[in-house]
Length: 290
Image 1: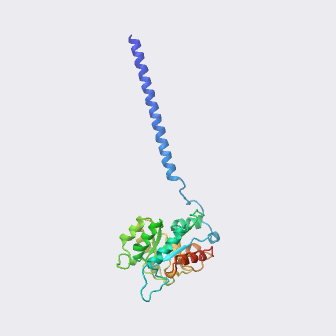
Image 2 (image 1 turned 45 degrees about the horizontal axis):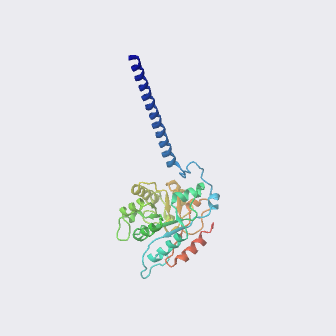
Image 3 (image 1 turned 60 degrees about the vertical axis):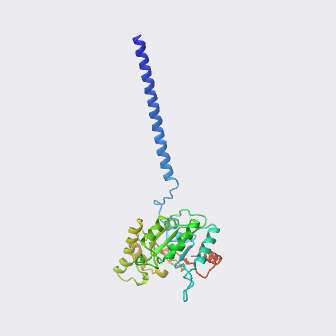
């Protein structure tokens, strides 16, 4: 009888051990499966082109240009205003609406850079919205209007203008733009033209210090630059490279055949254009023109 009882106890112990092993195995498989699933979801189509070589100038120039629009003040005209440069809010809204209705999607500078240098894919109808000079209406008018369409913008700021109401944006407003997915980049310290930079101190003041300020403000690298008035020089491009600028934006003049990344073209969205006129001009300007 004792032998039978001992045998029964041994069988029960073995059965329990087997169950525990099966549970452990199931738990291990579950954990592995979960880890694999998490890893896959994080790494699916990451668009990481870090290891691809950068294209040469000829290849970059041969790629179809992405339309890039440039805006400054977005407000109603006053007497003596340059009507090309100042866009009434209703006109600005018409500009964005026709682009949204036509299926255009905004991209940001890193996407453009990866497309130009490494052939990374873009949306079917990409374009970029850029704003110069830190004006407050770019926050109060442009940002809410972009939000309607899921558009994101690139704000090229003069760092001297931060926290200078009533015309310019505050640091808190710039941080809010970043939190909403927009990008803040440099437009110099005080809008001095690049051809006027003659000394190391000029480059430090207009490029290095604003770059550092923006990085401290946003917590992100500042790699891009817009030339005041769109004015650039061949001699300035090596300096921009030396000072950590990855790419730079001009206006609608011809790109440099040796350094197209430092002469990326934009066009001003004129305050005199209807939505349709802007659309027509954009197609004409960026029709893969060299």
